[in-house]
Structure formats: C-alpha cells, structure tokens
Image: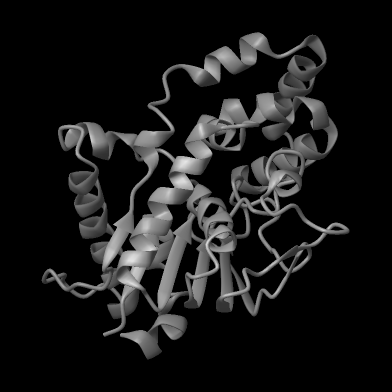
Length: 276
C-alpha cells in the first residue's frame, strides 16, 4: 500500500492536551480515528479490525493555540454595522423556507461577500483558528506549514488528504516547498475559495482572480458537502486552475463538516483505490 498522509482541520487542540502536550501522541490518536472513519467509507460499514490506511496525520493545532471564548469576544468587538448584519442574519435563518444547513450556507456566503472589511471578525466568530492562521505576519502560519512539510518530506506519501483549514495549510506548504511531490491531493470541506478571509490572502496570492494547483501535485480532487459553511464556495474550479475533479456530497443535515463524515461517505473510495 502506498503512503497516505492526512492533514487535520479545526478544533483539534484537545488531542494535544489529552496526550499530555505531546505532538506525537496527538498525531497518533488522530490517525487511529482517521483509520476508523475511512474504513467505514471503504467497506460500507464493516466491523473495524484495526486496519491501517493513514500513514501519519500531520499535527499543527498546538501552534495555533487553544480557543477560549473567542466567539463571544468577536461579537462584542464587532462594530455596529457588523453587529446589525449578524443579528439580521440570525433572524433570517428560521424564515428562509429551506433546510437549516442550506440557509446557513447561503447566508454565510452572503455575509462574507458584504462584510468585506469585517470578514476577519466573522472568521473569529465561526473559526478562530482560521483567523489566527491567516493573521498578517502570523508566526503560527509559518510554523504550521513547517510542521506539515516535515511530515510530508519524511513520509514521501503518494496521497495527501487535507480537511478544512488543513487544506489551506497544505496548499501553502506544497507551494512553499517545491521538493514535495504528491500524486494525489484530496481536499475535504475546504475554505480555500473563501472570499475576504482566505482566498485573497493565500501565499502565493491569486493572479487575476485565480489560484493554481501546486506545481508538484499531479492530481487534485476536491470534495465538499453542498451546505458546508466552512467550504464557501464548495466548488473550487471557479477560482483555482488544476482542480481535476470535484464532488458535492450531502453528508448530514447538521453534521456537515466533520472529517468523520467526509472520510466515511464513500466519495474518496474510487480515488484511493489505486493506492490501497
């Protein structure tokens, strides 16, 4: 079996804390879960017998710090205009005449387009780790990329599976380290195309409104839940060249972003089969 490296998303600091502040312990605990989740997708739910699929999960959450009450702080520190938009959005959700996740997705996209200068506050509210990573001059950004590069360089995997914020870290890491060659990059629930928060601030910056597949990546497959409020827009072909395939999935009316749902949905199976 070829080597497969995972790059985790948001909300994973607790693995570091629970393992006694051990990066290796956190990475191992995450790999165990990724293996179990992926097994469900690959086998259609057959009993898990400790099969190994993921070589290693690149862990970097400890570099972004543990989130504490950022959501409340973000609302309190928004200017009046941003607060009004947020309140109006919250009121509209229940009267959109559509599913909750669909309403959240549509209104989140609208907010990102209209808040512009206040988009950083929005990011702090819904995803403080994204805000910490994307902050101008962020030392955590450089260290996170270095951590992911080290794991990829040491393992030389054929496949990298990057979830959520991990897709941003991986994208920048592969551009910044041209010695890293990957046969297949799979992004799950990626916010790479998120306007005003991520897309325009990527390294390297988009040219004429377009980002580009990292040069040493042979194939790029993007998979997103159609209503994932982190993956806005869910499709990346409208803002990145070199996305070979895209798939929109419908994971769960409430649990629409977790790596468990993405790995277990079966959408990765055909892409991973040649490497297993």
